[in-house]
Image (cartoon, rainbow, N blue to C red; front, side, top):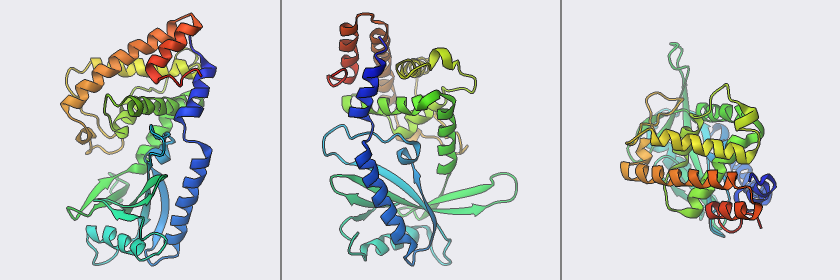
Length: 302
């Protein structure tokens, strides 16, 4: 059975990040932007990226576990600075502030603020260079502190691509399906796939001319459609395929994967697809709920 009402309840109670935490997150992000706007580290804007921009953040699988949030800040190109200097100087700025000095850390391409018990905020400096040769248009670069190199990126283009895919399917069922698959990954912990890989594989399965009335008529049906398409695509690839960034030809996302992880993911998706089909087709309500619980755990249907 579809159990539409039970899916809605389950998503609200167990998967979707609750409004209180979203509001708290937005307040902290707003405070950081206000701090940067008033600082000597001039920025041209701060924007969500990753799951924050894609609306695919989910509740942590374990109570009190922190989740990750990413933002990019557009920065001015500073004369005499090397790539690593943008990270180091941003870190120094936050380290000197009494509000942030105990929260701040740094990674290769960002600084991070640790809001203990809540979330980690990664702040990624971003440079933009406009090229007028008709090939690239706007060129974005992030900075690698470890290698002292500039790296091409286009997080804005990727977000637009993913949101266009979501707009094809009604009522955000596509984004909701991503959240539910992420929940399955985090709660089961028996397969591994980075969100950028998962999002891209699923986005590639959505075409412009979808039969919305049949395959995406409600959320359980949409989820079943997406899981089955993913399984069919994986089964068609006996070895790990190359998953390209749809917005940056030179980049693929396979650095986040290997053959062992791929084969395990492929096997798990295959039997989860079988379980989803079985639960969806089951006409007995009690048996159907038990079969959905086999997939999502005992909190489904209560």
